Image (cartoon, rainbow, N blue to C red):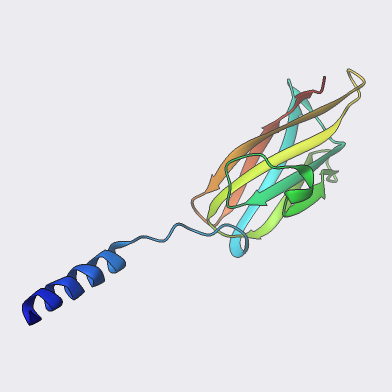
Length: 129
């Protein structure tokens, strides 16, 4: 009886110890994610970028964890930077205005931060119908 109990305890401890915890996305890390929005080959500089932690799926606009407007820097590049992110899964979404077609544009994609460093992504956006 004692042997069976000992073996059961050892198996339980092995299973608990072998589980790998998936990284939890969010604030508190060292990743800086520079986000740009493009419609075809044009930069969209009047865009708001939204980010949702711990998901690879789009959510309703009110459910995103952070949002920031894209701004132009001193040499005319348009982007926003989300600083202090941890490793993990994110969904990045953007909405804005494309003056070349006089129409709203939007789009998003899942993104996984695997290394906490300076990263850059482009969000492709398209016309809303």
